[in-house]
Length: 229
Ligand SMILES: [Zn+2]
Image 1 (cartoon, rainbow, N blue to C red):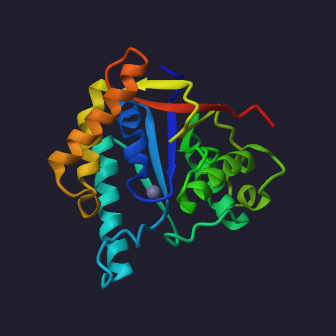
Image 2: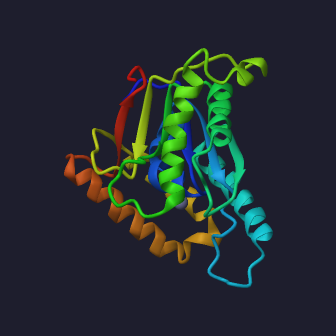
């Protein structure tokens, strides 16, 4: 297992992290790792009903994400409040990510792979860039002086793991926590439809990833060493 005592996972929408890395996060939490999750947007456009009230959708999704975090064993769930569907790579959002990194002090940060070819959703591309940019802003001592002034000194996670990648080089066997991952996803009741179908879909997907590497159920990531430039 990758050396990790503290982990932070950053996703565009409530449920992205659970879907892509929920098994790894639950495994680490079960082994005593301090896990935190940050959702960049409120997910308020996540409804198939054109008459839905976005504020009400956001309220429901926040409660679902808190329950999902508990199901994975996360110590804390952050909501950064960006507008769903309009996430942009701005200095303000980069600093918001760096603030969470400096406060939670993870060894490993998990996020969307922004360099995945043909990644359609703009929020997922922006979230990936904000995560890696936030790591650099958290790491370098002369970056983000406003954070130091808030009492948040620089912090360098040793590794970034990117999910949704087409170049996996770190595979986590999540056989023992696949049920916890599915339980977390079921907490997103407004999003997931039939819970039995969800469970079948997740099992099939993670078993297929595992089969490629001679494992049971697995999640795959691309590793970035944060000592790079
Ligand atoms: Zn998403």
